[in-house]
Each structure stands twice: as C-alpha cells, then as structure tokens.
Length: 182
Image (cartoon, rainbow, N blue to C red):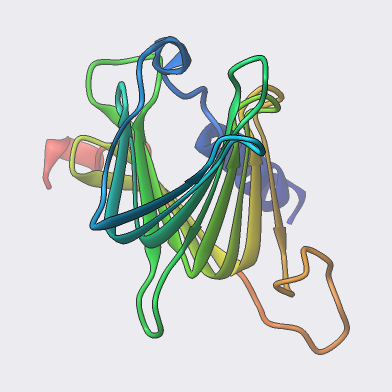
C-alpha cells in the first residue's frame, strides 16, 4: 500500500513539470470579437471566441478579463459560456514534444506568481506528443509552476469539504510491456 501511495505521489509531482520558461518574455497576442478597455485600471474585457497566445501558451474561452500590473505582469481570468469550458495548453521544458493542457469552467492565471487555478469540472493532462501520461480531474485544481506543486480539492471553493465532489488521478504506464508488444 505504501508503494502505491508513493508511486501516486511521484506521478502527481511529474504532472507539474515546468512550463516553457521563455513564454513569459514573449508578446501576448489576443484575438476576440469584442473588447472593452479601462486604461486607468489596466483592465481589458474580451468577449467572443477569445484566443490568447504567448509563446507556446494558448488560452481559449468565451470571455477573458486581462489585467496588467504597472510592472507588466498579466493576470487573466477565463470564463466559459454555459455548458462550455475554457482551455489552456502549454509546452513543458524537458523535451521536444512535452505538453500540459487543461480545461475548466473558469481558469485564473497569474503571471507574477506563476499560479494557475481551475474551477468547476477541472481537468489537467500531461502529454508526450498526443499520448496522455497523467491526468487529474476534480472540482478545483491549483498548479504552482514555480514550486512545481499541484493541489486538488473536492469543492470549487478550493477547500475540501465533507460530502464534496471527488477527484480522479490517472497514471499511464511508464514502461513498455514485456517483449516489446504494444
């Protein structure tokens, strides 16, 4: 039992492998249908098929609230229209075709703290090319890219509550079957 818990914990840590570090130094390109800007507060509200691209990071949603600090750090809140999800995808450091992607009804990304929070029907997948290597689902997932730590809670508030939802951790095999058969 202890070995199973240790394996699950180590696999969860691998899910948090570092995102492409160079992305934060690239320009953000945002496509949208409608935009409202408040220069005093540094707030931009984008609606309608919003796609934000910054290096290998791609964020998509029906609505995005983008704030920029005086120092130039962005925070983005993505929200999906009823029945849809907001999504993100980003290349991970460590190999040529390593990716992390996720989806939820609301995604909050804070560039300064390198923190991503996914609320309601949250899913985060680690990919090698198109092959899923790990997946976490739950009502709330928080991922700290700096510390490389993920937290999953059974309630959209970010807390675990009695009678709350349940999460799922899927660990794909890391080794090939005996004899090399697929």
